[in-house]
Length: 279
Image (cartoon, rainbow, N blue to C red; front, side):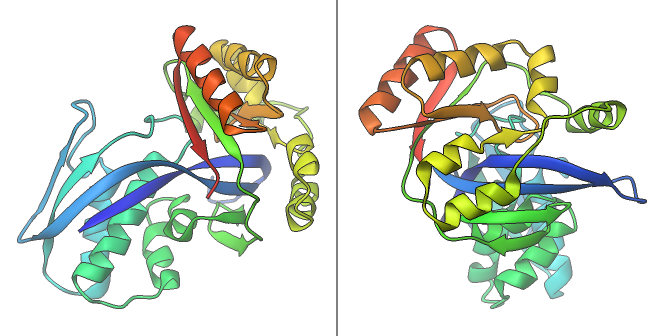
């Protein structure tokens, strides 16, 4: 069985509090895009993972492996899976590639083993080892709160042309949250306004409310974030911003031709770049 694991971008991302357990409460609008990894999976006696990227672990450090263990433990059956993971989404880039791989694995195992678990049950399994996994189970457009596990499905976005680009080394998510805790002044993020703009299918309103509380911090440490954003805006993007805790940047463009042209420009400038759409 083959399953696609789609990347996500954050149209808004705000940190609204720190919890007693040390985790942070967030408020974010997430959106699935058409950039994806591929999961090829079949039944096996043991959990065996192979991948096309040599630097990706294939043991319990990989969320796909954790998804298998959590699934079999939850359904109470003794089983395994042979999984080929074909990575296309940049790693540690704020695009939920690992979480989406785990979500796709849970969906596939549910079908292969005919366990008939609901999406809510799969989300509960996924939330036990990854905050973005519940969103990635269903994808689409959603307001995510709590640690990302409280999900309100929103109306689907109009199809938008998106370019995603990254320039190098990722950021430590715990370090980014620690920096948030140390700052007394942070960028104002209008997530409620974004939700209203999506409901009204107001593309201008959506673009004007793009916001990520981590962007300023990441740009200080990864200057290429600002450079990529500038290239996108100079080459026809309606708006551009960083996704997740970085360092990937996405831009929203008026048409495919302009987006593809900017993709080529970014590649010529030495950056990774991908054209995709919202889905």
